[in-house]
Image 1 (tube, rainbow, N blue to C red):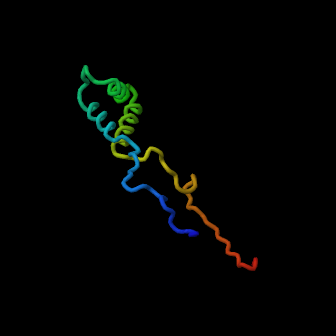
Image 2 (tube, helix red, strand yellow):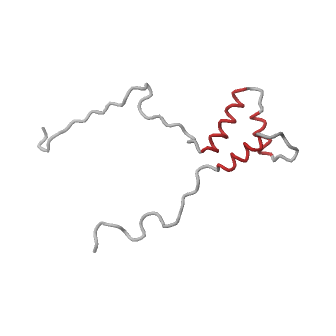
Image 3 (cartoon, rainbow, N blue to C red):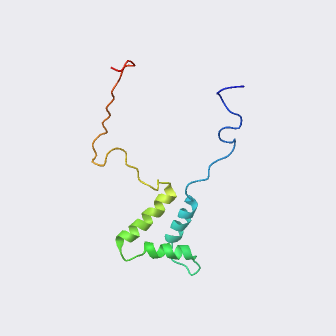
Length: 102
């Protein structure tokens, strides 16, 4: 009986591609619709986004546009913080121990 090595059928199947994480074309379509004048036949989604992007409060307008641009351009949806919150570099302490315990 063989021990170790590659198993038959293990790993990703050939030719299978993972689904895209974000629908970039949807955000692009929305931005195209928002960058032109409103029409009577705009669908519900466009009307709702138009309400956000034309809100009275400037921060609401900016956040809505920034969200759509980030989706279209493929920006990560969650910010990552590498290292401690205080901004100091990470300290790593390594203690080497001999095999006899010293």
